[in-house]
Length: 489
Image (cartoon, rainbow, N blue to C red; front, side, top):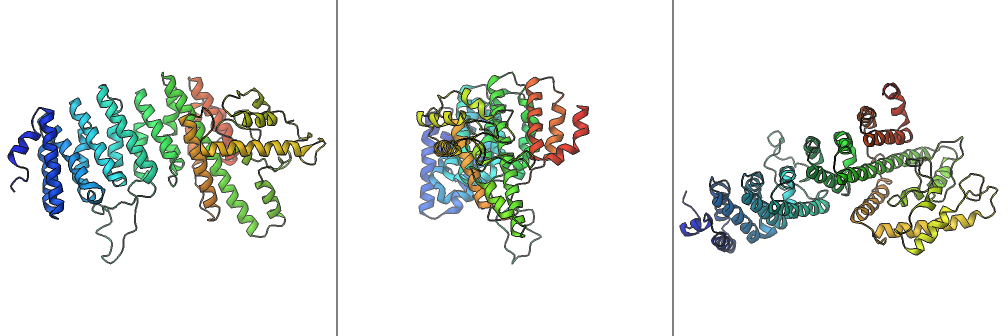
């Protein structure tokens, strides 16, 4: 088959001078635009195939760079309207070039893949696993220019995942495993371009790394995926929990602190999932006509409901506690790592505005005993004052967190606030669909935590014990079954 690239243009693409290569890519872009105007799709296919096979995978370094840059120029010329059918020929050679032995090729691979991803957006998620695997290497590259290019690409892919991972459908049906077995008249069910089931095994494999930069890369990706509405990464927690715990022994303070923060966020999400399941169970019992149950359910669901007596079942987490989790927890049963209401007075007030700080101070001065005015119907003088302060503080803090407008709020806190809003929406949506809760394999999680109790690293040991303590409230049956293992540990 004759070449669709003119001889002079072919020589310029493989030239060692970058200026000549850049001029050649502009001519390639012009060829694609002319083919689109002439509605000559076959010519574009031939051009992309030639660039991918004869240039991007050539043995000559200059030819590989020219081919990658020309493919990126082709993507820009195609725009997001026409690029989809050509992605299977463009993306694989670019991903392969991320592992090239020459640093210049790796850099231009990052640049070209960035341009293709910016044009195609969600359509590129079909190759997310390959891109993630390649980025895990180049984000830890020893050459600064390559690392900077990888960081730009990484941020763009994170934006695409956050926006479209839960909604973008897989448009390419060529590799369906069941394509031959389905009847011709049958319509295949749509599937997403991004699949957690396919990604989690790769994530679990990469958690065995010892490079601090790669560990930070993995931590950030877990945090991003956990914040995407519609993706329940927490269901796959047992697959990467062991690796996260081992990150706590990393020599880098940054790795340890971010790992501890992520583990706290995951534990909070577990608690919220359990609350959602309890809500479904309560509504189911109420719908079955349990005597007096509806009244108790509405009382328990109130944000200002009094704490239950010692003889009744403990409330695992309250609405008030959940609303202010990002900056600190107020008293509720059980306390998180022993933090109770009285400790709030010792917390620094610099993270909140003066108005919020005033109301938090009022909350901190509230009595803690059950015989005080904090609880309606007790011997206290003015329970309404405490409830008014609670209402005001919760309203101010919740609105500030939801909008991410607390003074001095870091990017991590803004992301945590976003996750809080997402989970609140998930709970509101799931409440109308009984049985739609997230199922967490607590038994596997406990089996992972128990060996870490014997760890020589105090931070790993303390974190494992703290998680098991929280699990005694979240899944008591699993903890009871694991008592022999805990005793031996």
